[in-house]
Every structure is written in C-alpha cells, then in structure tokens.
Length: 339
Image (cartoon, rainbow, N blue to C red; front, side):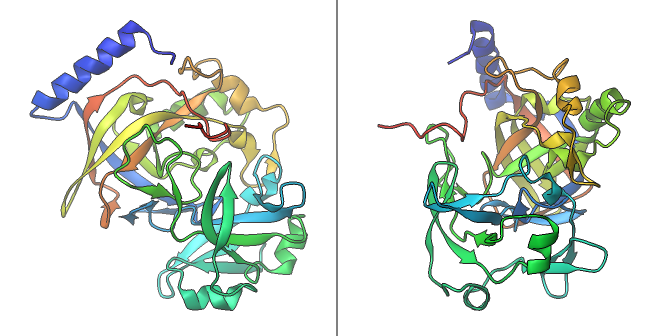
C-alpha cells in the first residue's frame, strides 16, 4: 500500500480529533443534484432536491445499455469511451408519471420509470419477470434484460449494436472492496461507490484553466451526483466524515476515495464527439495528479451514504467533521481478490 508516515500520522490525528470535536471543521452548501438513470448515457438530470435511498441518489445508474458478447458469452456494457455519442441525449423528469424522459433528437424520446415494477419488467422483457446473472466488470449480479424499451430508431441513429438492450438491476451488487465497512450496502451499476461529490469552485477552476483549449467542458462531463459550493477549490479532496444538515435531521456519509478520471471529460457533451487530443485530461494532468497510487488525474470525491430514505435539497448545509489524505489502491477493472 502506497502510504507514507506523514499520511498515516495526519489521518490518525484527524480521527482522534474527530472523536472530541464539538463543531465541524468547515461547512459548504448544496448547489444542485444530478441523477444519471442509465449508466454512461445522457447528460444527466439536474435538480434542486432529490431522495437518497439505499443505493445512493434514487434511480441513479439503475439501468445500463449493453449488447451481447459472443466471446464473453454474456451481456457487455456499452462504454462512453467507445460510443461517445451516447452523451448527447438530454433527460428530464416527468413528475406526474414518475419517469425519466430521454430526448435523443429534436422529435424523439423514450422513457424509463423511477420505480420499476414487476409489471413493467413483464411488459418490456421477452424473458418476463425472470432475473438472470448479468455482469458489471468482473462482478455478477441479478438483473433483468429489458429488450423492448429502446426504439429501433434510437439504436440506428446512434450507431449502436443492433442487439443493444437495457439492463436493470433491482438488488444491485456487493461493494467491490470488502475491506471497506459499508454497513451491508450494495451498489447498482456504479463504478465504485454510490455517490460522487464535487464542488462548483473546483469545476470553475478547471474550466478557467482548460476553456481556451477545450471550451466544450461542462460540469456534466465529470458526472457528479452532489454539487456543493462555498469552499475553496478542491477542498473535497480531504473530505472524510461529512454530514448533510436538512430540514428533517442530520445524515452522515463517509468519503473513502478520490474519483480517478477516465477519458469521459474529453467528450463534447453537445455533439457527442470525443476530443481525440484529450485536451481536458492533458491539461488537468499538470495539476490534478494528486494521488500517488495512479498517474491519472482526480476530480471529486466518492461518498457512501450511511443512512437512507431522506431528501437533500439545494441550500442544505454540508458539514465536514473529519478529513483524510487518500490513496487510490483499488480498481474495478482488476480481477477480484481471491481468498
């Protein structure tokens, strides 16, 4: 493990101080929330209030696009790095029908429900309400193949594999990292942890540095779930124990890891075209290689919600009660550790 003595002592002091602390170290304010109902698809839905459930933000990444891999003999997810055009669709929320509506050209849409029922699955799957094993990275989970949701015109227009389907998971998968105490929580089609937090100030700093060469950059490019404001840029790098103060109470999260960035921020959200020069990543590498375990850039911090069934809204306070220096020493693309 790539941890030096300074880091160990800093984290130990933070933990001891946390036990005796009467007030938070610092405070921020919730600016907005973003939900991405289908993993690696669309610009996401931005709102000023949303419910936290057992899996993170309710409805976030509970669906995934996939096509059948003959070589792997299983469904394989469609990746934005290969199909960057999947970033283009916009998404809105129809409150009356409790559904997400995806607009994939000027005239055409399709929708998925926030609350998926057995009746919906029966109607939209050739296999009926019968779960089967599906995979995310190397990890299996039970899920459903919804092969009657996506319009053929959408698949053709976006040049996706002809057998592209929508996968849905109800129960999710175990956390990828058993050494982390997650209180029995699971994730759905999330890469690592259920929630990604980033600050407006951090993105503003990124944009000020990359906008000349990469004016296409947006906050959506980094796909955060909770956007905060009111702290210096990159303060979230050190978040550890945090608390959201809402009208109905205080709700805790812990923040175990930086978010190590892939190539997705190099996609032009409006056009769905990948910047082959990777200018956002190249520019950010000059000052955001902050984790000694990886040469990749980092932006935002992952969070585990330690409770659920409550609402966070813009204007709520985020309290930081302890901080930690982090080392990214796991990767979902690695084979699972064998006992």
